[in-house]
Length: 315
Ligand code: TXA
Ligand code: MG
Image (tube, rainbow, N blue to C red):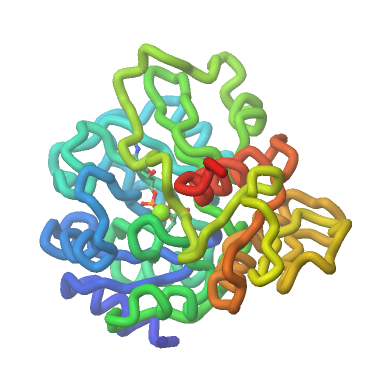
């Protein structure tokens, strides 16, 4: 782990990888315009190359290098939500390497709000392509320790300002002034509609799909079930419980991780991956997760939870 942002920026410039904090989760970054460097991200994460990456920028002026068209809708969203946890997918410039966009004619871009990320972008002078810094399909990292646990071979894991949001950015596709949510996050459909009121959050007949939206993802290395869908109780097993708020029967569980003290969804999101990492690292045999209300950022939490339990959704 390192506090040396200057060195990290040099590594990016030399085509090496750096794990760095953003306001959402830790990213695993490389120079977005260096295809060989970006290839190392896929190799390190063991991520399939059909899954495109998000390009992180520091300044709106960098958009010209990435998008073919910068229209009013894009500028409004950028002004309103950047720096912040919103990723915008739109038609890409040819110069953006195919490996970044997984061969699509679009690219995903966001401007992170985290100070350490912004400093790294500034000192390196590069656009940085970065997925979450976890091994493919595993829990997303929100601390440098989480990154080290999953990717111990990395040379540079930056310390610095820790993620605050706790789950990944909202990803939207923007096409002719209309948006479609590809991955729910902290910024909700209602938030977006306030800025683009004429846009009717598009559905169906959109040609662009998000290849990274797999059914199974974000999984701890232990069986995990949604509450109500767990196998029959067994006295010789240790149960971990991921609770939203108050726990009615705490004696049933060996370890309880409570996401929020007062049923606050923002607080729950901020604690979500941390709590799951603690349960993954504990000696419980399996994890039971309580569903959260599906409103606001609760939609994003349930999206992650449903993917995390996907392989265990049958009894
Ligand atoms: O908060 C975040 O977004 C974090 C931090 C590090 O910025 N990054 C992150 O990256 O979550 P990743 O790679 O784990 O997720 C990127 C998502 C994937 O679901 C991917 O399929 C989608 O964005 N995506 C990227 N480029 C796309 C494109 N051109 N079209 C559609 N979806 C795209
Ligand atoms: Mg990810």
